[in-house]
Image (cartoon, rainbow, N blue to C red; front, side):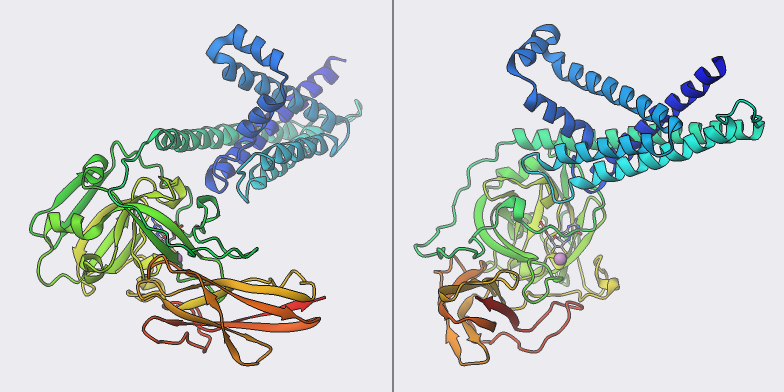
Length: 513
Ligand SMILES: Nc1nc2c(c(=O)[nH]1)N[C@H]1C(S)=C(S)[C@@H](COP(=O)(O)O)O[C@H]1N2
Ligand SMILES: [Mo]
């Protein structure tokens, strides 16, 4: 009898440790890829949402401002009890406890993905955590079984004991280390998120004027400005850097008469203006979605560079991120009074989102992001293309890369059949810093037909275009091409994204029913 009790106590320990593995892996994945979509906070928030008001009020009465702590402690106890039950179940029957753990994982995934504003990868932390926890449980209890077989007649092996204890200790230490690391990581992110939420940017000295007719009212077309949460994100950062604007400094040095260091307040005091700029990634394939428009709040880079006075002979600015990423931008593009190259602190009416470079990033109209749009900016080094290389240069991309004129069909979409009859073909076109003059559409290899354009906000912002179409049933091919304000027609020949951006006309198939 005592022997059985001890066996189940070890099984309970294996369950508790595997529960720890579940949480540690889930929180790690949450910090790495899913921006705080960890199961602990998600399930906690879920409980807060479903607990009836009287219970909530009672908790606040009993625990005051420690009510959240109480909630987390209760959750912790619930997880521990669940994990112990899973351990005992697993000892009773192989895979029974692991199954329970996977069910808990499914519940945690459900709690996470149903949160408002959940990221696309929000399911991943709980899913991977549950798999890791279940695997750990099966492994540990298998070893326990080898050490303490069910039949009393079978001998216990001292080797089995050792193997079980070593595995149990390794899993426990691993979970503790990974869990503590993830908590530290997410605490850093969430404290910066709180700083950002409390930040009030000064009002801009000038605002973008949005002309009448700047937006076309067509279902399925890209909005004139891309919402921050829909804005594409491209970077090499495994975790979103946490940069505190209170301690942030921008160093401007290199080939300058006077090196300068600016604080966030110094930058704000230079005066903010609002700019409308469409950004594009060099990795955007023809018809792709690595492009987006925003109203940015920022300070002209030329004003900042002027403080340090670049020396003759310099032809490049190497901008550096806190995470080591660098971009090479022609000095001339940053000092040109006719080009709105900015250090941006605001995006669509908010401080920059953390993923988009909080607190300060660069945005340069007309240059691909990898040669201009450094996020989490920390240094501007005035230098030469001969002396310095940016992150992507030795990796097969051009040191200089102006954005190529391009156009995209947003609607109709290849994956959604259109009913026969009158419909509208529509999309966007961009030629930053030059402007779009016209967009043409071709249906089934017929004549190019001119589309109607929205009134441009400026040359740096994409335009929307639309063309009415009397759709007849069957399958049709739609193609689009743009012409820029300088009269250049979008390149027909398809080229890949490396080394300096794709070209080609987008063609898409539509089914009309
Ligand atoms: N620190 C840092 N900044 C970066 C990058 C990066 O990898 N790290 N990627 C660049 C690239 S390739 C692009 S296209 C834009 C994308 O900006 P977004 O993520 O805000 O859309 O950021 C640029 N700035
Ligand atoms: Mo990019």
